[in-house]
Picture 1 (cartoon, rainbow, N blue to C red):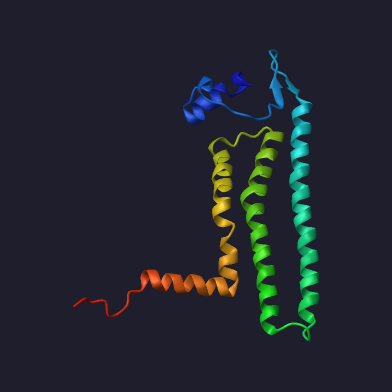
Picture 2: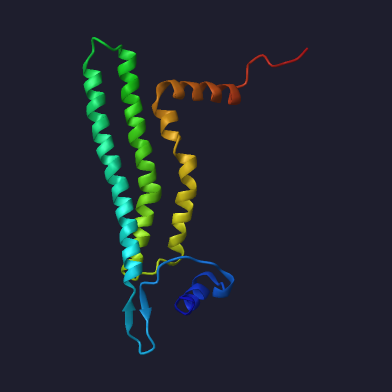
Length: 174
């Protein structure tokens, strides 16, 4: 694998292959005669990872659909719940949807693109660094939908911003 990556790493990143550590599948191994041999163990490994990603997304979809129907059933029973509770349930559901989309967009999709590029023997070069960035952003972006969708959190954030950025009119000291 070092021989296969040596020139590409030098051209793309200007690094010597001996100075870096990397992990990745080497599916299409070039033989001395110029033909390629497929490493089916690496292909199976990538397929297992695809299965894990797919099962994760499928679990999110099934759980989301079940939550949607159960929350709608609860909201439609107006005799037992207040308007405030119904609104809160809806806000929590929409926060859940947006919080579900964040890992799909920031982790599942980029990793899937990377795996597909490996399977079709496509070198992404420096574009593969996007995955490191999106996975790093995930913990910071994950709570944001909840803070802005749920009304009580939104009100608390607005009041904190007012306290920090809006100065009182009478601030002179005698």
